[in-house]
Length: 121
Image (cartoon, rainbow, N blue to C red; front, side):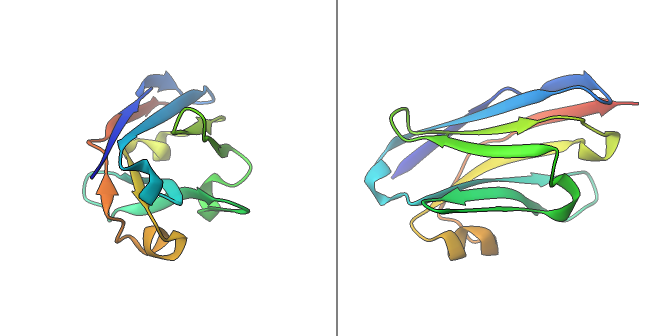
């Protein structure tokens, strides 16, 4: 089993920045891919960004504003969010899986509890 714990959410004004962190523990040898999803009220969950060795992906709406990174020594993945917009407001969830393809399909084996990001206009 893998446990994921997110931190770093909060309230920020439009144009501001936040950095989310997700620390993995447990059977981390089974993880090759990590990423972030978000879900706003009344909307479907969407992939924000994901990372594995040699590959990253971002949803179009965050390209150029968000950056995903991973510190393997700390078993932690980060999401640096700059130039935040009110439409970025959502619950952000960390996800992890052995497979990058499975993770980006939305069927990751491991999920965190989520952290709320609220962007005020």
